[in-house]
Length: 251
Image 1 (cartoon, rainbow, N blue to C red):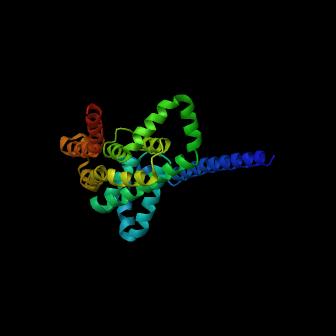
Image 2 (image 1 turned 45 degrees about the vertical axis):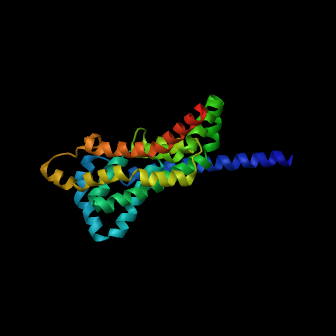
Image 3 (image 1 turned 180 degrees about the vertical axis):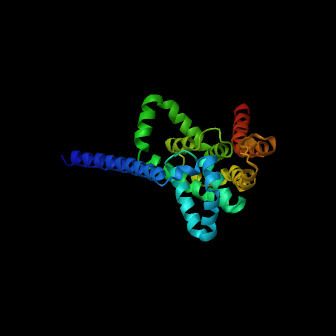
């Protein structure tokens, strides 16, 4: 009987955590739109609020940085739209290097929050559902991915092949260790983040000329080439292990 009560208590606790997460998600989305923060997730919004944003930084830089980070962390943790425009806003407000670092810290914290929630709050349910559907195939994929998690996570961060939140959730689902997730996210998003912060830093000139930022710069060979090279370098340990394994099998 006591075991049944314990199971019921565990189920109630798990349900309570999920309901609390859903409630927090709904409240933050409501606050996001109630305070017109959605005005920052479009080019028009940045154009209309450029002077106000720069004035806020000039009046109280520290408070503005903390407020900006809170908004960015919330947007990433709850997969709200507009992270790209928030990154441009960071470059506009704080400059390329300071803005880039602020964005990297905020994005890493937000991604880590989503990872932890997915791994420890709803992770068991997600894994059970996925396991019942794919079973042994999922287990093999998990083992292969985690054997070279550093390399694979760096590639996924350096080259935005999949949406940011999909990588966060997928890493939690396949059981990537938190330190691996944290460090590969922090360092992997650096190159692309500084590119977007640099674009944001130049928005003032574009606004004066009545032009819009050219976001296709990420596909420019001069930008994409080094990112691909870094991704291939990250893949080197995987290729080395496979090469050595093939040599041992043939010997």
